[in-house]
Each structure stands twice: as structure tokens, then as C-alpha cells.
Length: 303
Image 1 (tube, helix red, strand yellow):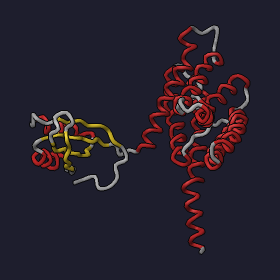
Image 2 (cartoon, rainbow, N blue to C red; image 1 turned 180 degrees about the vertical axis):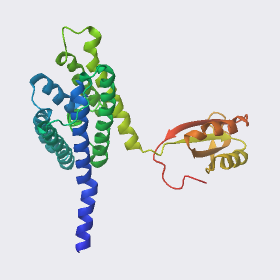
Image 3 (cartoon, rainbow, N blue to C red; image 1 turned 60 degrees about the vertical axis):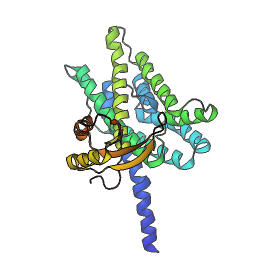
Image 4 (cartoon, helix red, strand yellow; image 1 turned 90 degrees about the vertical axis):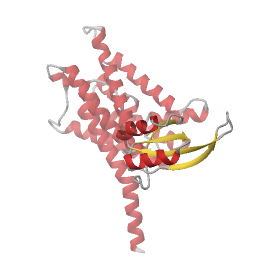
């Protein structure tokens, strides 16, 4: 009985509590150290809170708290209780940490504006901030399937108008925040190019966030799948297995244009082995092949 209770506690900690903790802490560090000091808004509710801090002067943690409370109730009653609670807990932790960081004297900041090359340092800040926010986003998506914030608004709108996708709506809300930064960070003394810097940094940050999230969600075990239609499957499969040390699977297929039966080889290889497989295929002139990336390879990958 006690062991079952401890198993349930352990499952809860690893499946929910730990992801909420990691995402909240990583997000707060990314915003406070890299985003806010370099004066750009990375989109979404996080970006809106950063813009409000710049415009009003309060710590962005307070604004993040104010923005997420109504979003929590919307998500709780219209989407799902578990998703609403977990995403809001993560955001509350981020809010609290941002406020705490503001109270700590000399808390480290990657501030490009105190250097002789603010644009270069701002770009590094955008990349680093994007990595931190991407990690936080991926952890929450793996934990509860939603990141909260503008994703909640997008899901609610999608419930009403199904033809508008959640991803498109989320991107739209992010874009609104990014382009609003032009007015918040606008300086009459600066030129046109200088006033575009916050937008460009935000776009860099969003791109890095997206790519970081994709890598974590899809996994690091990226491989490539070759599908080879050939009249000599035995010879090609033997060469592939000898040269790449990966197996191959043969299937029968019918061409719908000629209605002839063909052999189809399917094999999964690593990226560095693409050229080797292409060289093998080129030695068989009547062979047709194509390949595509695949992620999260499970099972025995080697021959």
C-alpha cells in the first residue's frame, strides 16, 4: 500500500510538478536576464508583460500575474482543468521569480546597452532568450499539451471558428505583441533602422524559441527514411546493410500507372549516411527513390 502511494507521488512529481518547476524557472531567467535588458518583446503574454514594464515601469512579473489570472479562468471553464492549472502554476512561478529577481540587488543581466556594441549584444541576448523560452515552452507542451498564454486565447477562438487553426492564431497574437513594440520602444531621436531593432530582435527570439522547442519535442534522434522502388532489392539491401550497418525492409507494391508489381525497400539511416545511400542507388539505373526526415526513432536502430 505504501509503495503504491510513493509510486503515485513519484509519478506526479516527475510528470507534473518537475515540468512546472523547470518551465517556470527557465522562463523567468530567460525574460529577466536576456529579454528585458535588451529591450525587445518575444511575443505572447510574456512579451506583453515586458512591454508593459517598459511603458509603466513596474516589474514584468506583476503584469504577467495580472494577464494570466483572467486567462486561467477562461481556460479552466472553456478548455480543460488540468491544462489550465498546470500552465497557470508555471506562469505564477515565473511571475513570482521575476518579482523576486527585481528585489535582489545586482542580479545578473545580459545588458547590451551598457556596452559599446548594443546591437551585437542584443542579438546574442535574443538568441539566448529564445533558447530559454523554447526550453520552457517544450517542457510545458510535453507536460500538459499547452503552453498557456496566447495559446489559450487561440484555442478559445478556434472553438468558435474551426477554420482558423490554433497555430495560426497563436502566431497572429505573437505578431501583434512584436509589432506593438515599435511604439513602446520608439525613439524620435533614433533613425528608422534603430527603431526597427526591437522588432528584429523579437523575430530572432521567436525563431530560436520555435527551433529549440521543435528539437526538444521531436527529439535529438533525427534520422532519414529512404523508400526505394527497385527491381534489384536483394543487391541494394545487401549494399546498404554492409555500408551503413542499418537494416532494410522489403515490401511489395503495385504501380497504379502501369499496374506492375515492384519491390520497395524501406530503410532508416543517419544524416551522415545519406550520400553513401545515394551512391549505392545511382549504380542501379532502373531504381526510383526518395527520402525524408523522421524523428524519435524507437526500437533497434542498427542492423
